[in-house]
Image 1 (spheres, rainbow, N blue to C red):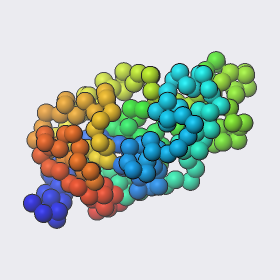
Image 2 (image 1 turned 120 degrees about the vertical axis):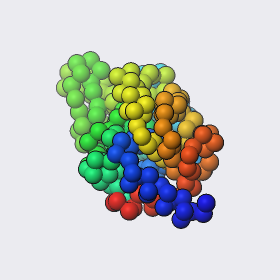
Image 3 (image 1 turned 45 degrees about the vertical axis):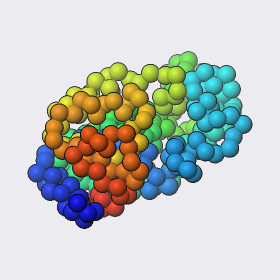
Image 4 (image 1 turned 90 degrees about the vertical axis):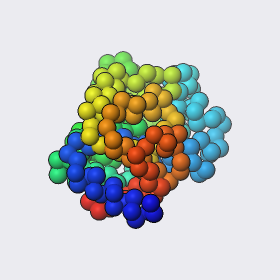
Length: 241
């Protein structure tokens, strides 16, 4: 099939389905100007005193909090970023009763900003921050107004509600994600290289015959997909945006 035939088949499947689950990664947000981690110009290829993988680990956060927050504020705590056509299209499909859930590896909150209601954030969100001592909540805007290393009114250290390396995923969110995927009649995987585990293993729970992978680069699971679309995800979803 050529590119247009693949798109037409995809749109036909969406039309026929009313229990769609979307599983997405960094590539969904790159069209909003948010860098991904593994591309040539992604975060893993930037130059810091420490490798980004080390900086965004639990032990580094505790050991070198100032350096963590210098990187975090510079590269992850982004301001003024807006949803793109992929986010808006998925929100519209949810309103139409097509998409039941969005499962995301992203931490930017753009799916909710676009209007999606049922969003399962596997890796947390930069929009939520908590005091490690008393549990008080702080927004991203609160954090921006604070010193480099933010402190609670009680004096405790504030930590972003994101899953750092060496930390486990929320088991409740994982279970809910498995349930949605297992019951879906169509699973759309977009903007992810499917190399981050355990999140990447979630698609193994899909039972149906409409597994669609939309990604600019080949993924490890292209061979098991029923349809592979090698285009920008925002362009594919612009039909509903």
